[in-house]
Image 1: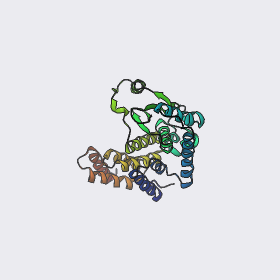
Image 2: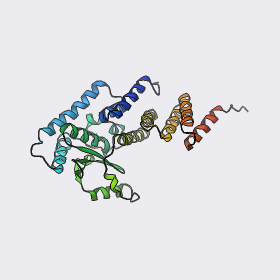
Image 3: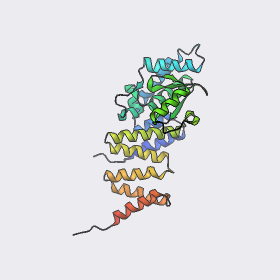
Image 4: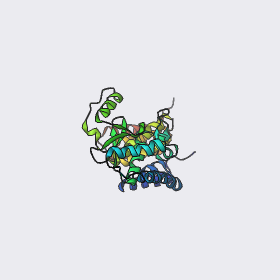
Length: 276
């Protein structure tokens, strides 16, 4: 049986944190996935080739709308990058490497493809994290909003309002701040939460543990992530690791509700067995 957390996993985590420090989105995503060097080169080659195809057609393309349509034509119509509505929660849809191979995935990873191809082609593309859906803005603000999951269809602000209302059942009021560019740590957090959810749906608790471990390293001041990591370790039978994480929570966040929960779990472990 593969160990729950290995030296290779620790190396991937270190590479991930360094990529975050360097603002290297693709490097961070490949580190989450533990992508081998050859596969990384192959994935980056796909992005480079797409960017070259965009650059070759840039002449006369001035407005943000024209640039958004050019990206949609190359990425969606010609290369086939699109949303996987049939099997949305397939874990492969939440991973950049498999997405670059299959050309199908979740909104946030498809948006990453647009962002990275745009960057290589000299077109500003920002990730926009609407509640429940991820889109892009092409060009400098206000730019042109587009939905990579839907083939790059352009969106108005009213379209975004309606999408948020429909996805949230009207429970989330619209805020202009939803259209702000999402910074790298917040984007990666969203990727990791998606991945954790997909792994959970697939019954892959070890995969969930990996995602939660990366999340707790990305957001080290949030004890809830550490508690989730400890609970998963316990569930998977790695009680020594679970206890280490519980102790870390108690030491670092002594006044939190998570520390209370961790203390109770350690107390349960220390209780002597009862014989009848």
